[in-house]
Length: 173
Image (cartoon, rainbow, N blue to C red; front, side, top):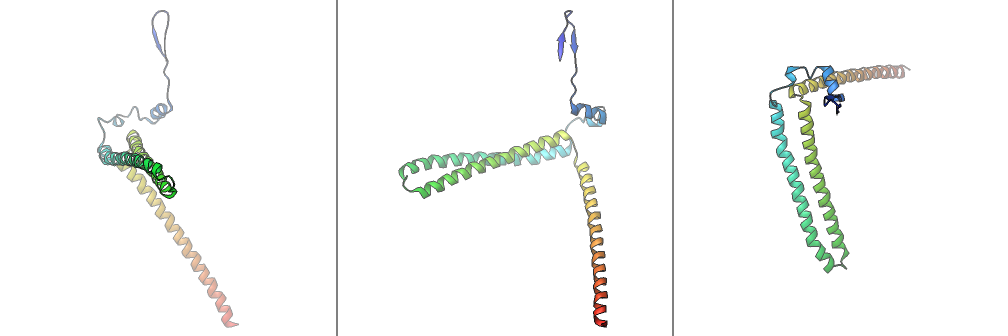
């Protein structure tokens, strides 16, 4: 916010945002490696991969919308000519609603893909960082699975021993 005093001096009152303060505390804004000269290879690859997907989904959404509108324009005169026949009208309305819903779903898919791409680029995470995180998660899952398998094996062994003892008492009696 800037205000002018009667002597025409400019006073600046900075307003900090939470993201900026957190970045300064974490050292991101003072870290020269954080300010790269341009996008990384993984970011370029993500853009090259996702832009055709987003474009295709948005194109399909537009084509579906156009087809639905054309179908509706063809169906309205048929409604007027064949108004006593209600079953085709219900079918046509159902197809029109399905077309609008499909168009909306494809459009939302394309826009959400674009949103994800922008968030991915803003975060600046590289693929190796994500791979390390995924590798740790997989190692944790394997350790947990191994522990559960060991516990289940121990339970089965104890149950088998108890059953063997019980059967042994029945055979001797």
